[in-house]
Amino acid sequence: MRIGFTYDLKDDYLALGFAEHEVAEFDSPATIDAIERALRELGHDVERVGHVKALAARLVSGWRCDLVFNVAEGVAGFGRESQVPALLEAYGIPYTFSDPLVCALTLHKGMAKHVARGCGVPTPQFELVTSAAEAAAVSLPLPLFAKPVAEGSSKGVTAKSLVRSKSALVDVCTELLEQYRQPVLVEEYLSGREFTVGILGTGDSARALGVLEVVLLEGADAGVYSYRNKTQWESIVKYGLLEPGALRTEIEHVALATWRCLGCRDAGRVDVRLDGKGRAQMLEVNPLAGLQPGYSDLPNMAEMAGLSYRALIGEIVRCASARIDAA
Ligand SMILES: Nc1ncnc2c1ncn2[C@@H]1O[C@H](COP(=O)(O)OP(=O)(O)OP(=O)(O)O)[C@@H](O)[C@H]1O
Ligand SMILES: [Mg+2]
Image 1 (tube, helix red, strand yellow):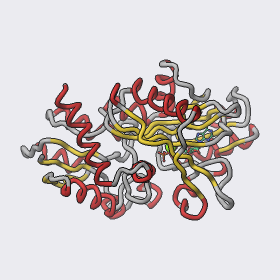
Image 2 (cartoon, rainbow, N blue to C red):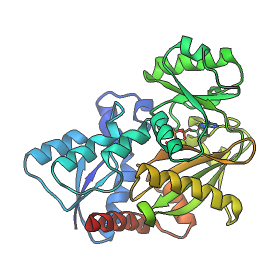
Image 3 (cartoon, protein in one colour):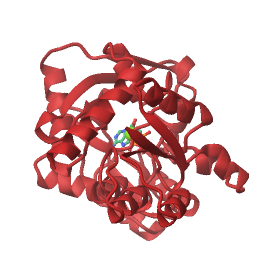
Image 4 (tube, protein in one colour):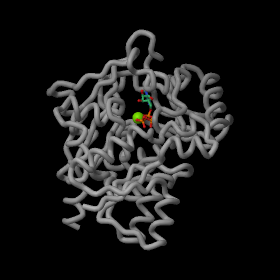
């Protein structure tokens, strides 16, 4: 197949004057090279396109391909991850992963929780905060957790996100509002074990690739998979696939119910945590999960489950093709 490849390269944006923390979610050259290599080894012709504006220019000039492998997350706004899928739909070009609706819905963690909860998925109670006064007026019981409503890679998630007093809540919300210029999601703090579930496929044929437990070691920010814990994982975080059993069944059920009810496609991750009573709760959904070999949870989990990096990329293309052929 002729596969176009859309992505947001860290270096492209650093060169444009973006700060390091602003490009945290973008891909490194190593990731882009690895995806391209895997696609080539699978026998495809790959054309690097890059970000949404590069794609727009190509489309206007008449460029076409059989499928776009899309990992572009965009720069700003709740629609940033939807921009490439929407543009491709306008030109009738099929692409991997979720559609514009799902990408926007899941980027806004509050909206995603509303919809998932409406489908019966368990997820913590929450409020959205847009000012210090709203933070002071939050009526949920402490302890609480505060994070930007539409970020990823644990941006804005620090040891301070876990709050045990009203004044700490007002402080962290004020800081997050100032720094990220978007509402803060304040939700019940889930004190139990943490998992991320890798998912392959769409609808009824979606399956859990594995359930990875995130175990924080000594020296880690306690009780939260923070930006520091995630980026310095080698020394302070341990990961392990959860063995079969009642807990794994429950977690997979929550993750797959979320995946299916929101309409996510091809591959991604659902983050799940246990509450104080040991019940699995959905935290958030990643329809464009990181694909950095040896670093990102999805390829790491695939590797642990016996699926090489190339095989994972191959499965994503296969799932996308099957769904497109069936449409
Ligand atoms: N309600 C909560 N209770 C306890 N911990 C939470 C809660 N919400 C988030 N966390 C912690 O913060 C981490 C980051 O939150 P979340 O997964 O929403 O952020 P993210 O930046 O979108 O993550 P990703 O890197 O998966 O895109 C979680 O992995 C978890 O450790
Ligand atoms: Mg997460």
